Length: 289
Image (cartoon, rainbow, N blue to C red; front, side, top):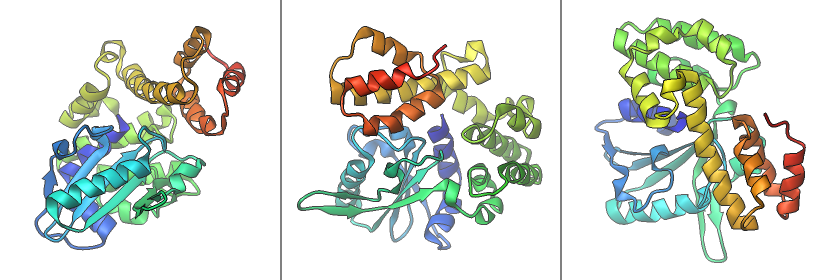
């Protein structure tokens, strides 16, 4: 859900992302199809923008863990892109949700014979000023550094309201509404961004269809939460299975009942677990409905 929103923004206005991340005034920009990557992992997070002299490879990540790991994926993608295009590749991983996990500070793959580096951006540490002046970057501005996040979200709402073209204003509002959910309470978001207006946005409808098909009949908010929960649950289950093998049915049942914030916390806590007993002890401490 969140990753698809960023993918839409980057592909809809690639020049805005090139200016922000490469600090250049781009000429011709092409959005490359991700099908060039064989069996891409979480391909909906992958954006490839080709300028005249280089390729900008963007990865948007809500959580810092994946299988295979982000560093290994960056290495694989760099090799594929270099072989195909013979151009310099600028790789940038943008983490969207604030976390203290050490994984969001890891910017290279390294083994006995190979070192591959790439850029990382923790959006919650970024100066919001450059993001506030570009409509397509306003959804990311809501997640940027601020001593008063609520005031920042109000600034974003004011900038969105100043967008003259109706369709663009609706679409950017929809994207802010989705991404702001990573940081703010829904009631505050609804006060600043009217949901009934965004329902007329083609972008809003497309985002819903991609991530929450099953949940749409039960309401927009519930559907968005269910879609996100299923995705994070699937990733965690694969990681747990690889580390600890098959779990007891009772443990699997408790994991499946975790809420989205608990799944995110488990993703970080999992890095410190030595065995399934550690996982069981952690689950025992969780309040599960």
